[in-house]
Image (cartoon, rainbow, N blue to C red; front, side, top):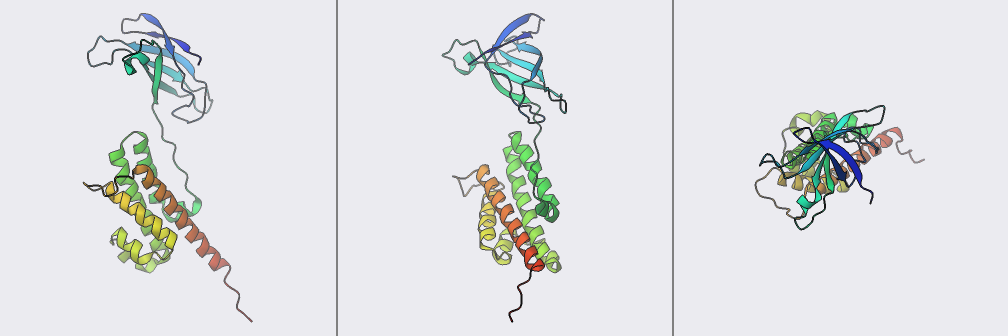
Length: 239
């Protein structure tokens, strides 16, 4: 594997030639694959006891004309990760700032529940920043908006009774499509785990919750489209 040499300064302004294992290959702002332009770097030494022995912050710029944003890549010496190693190369830990790329939902879902789309993307943004204790309850809230908005679209005259009703009760008593009921019910179980002190589903995690929400979204969209075509193309009367 080819190493890359960067020149970075320490706190005293002294330049050092730094060997890094790899350069960032994706811009954390626009999310395109890139070959970044190196601008400058700073070597943090062990002058301060709270700072890891040696790490480097390298400033890069995205070369895309539509982006051109500056971002910082954090490197740590490999020997710091492996105490039994004397390797002086620096390993890329990550880049910041990270701009979450919003998920674009289909037109029927956006029209049905814009609140669901917003809450889901806010939760995903929190997850991308490792704020899992915030993201989990957020996904659960997004699911509730999706299901209630869907049921209100089916029975608009019952909106006032649907809004305050517990999500689990609505799924059991209002949803007739078997696939939608199956995915929504299990998504609710895992979503509740994200909001309660004790977990019931220890072998499942937030990834399973997102997958079940995705399945639920797909089945909701299927129900919407099926209903639309039933209206557009009613069954011909038999002669």
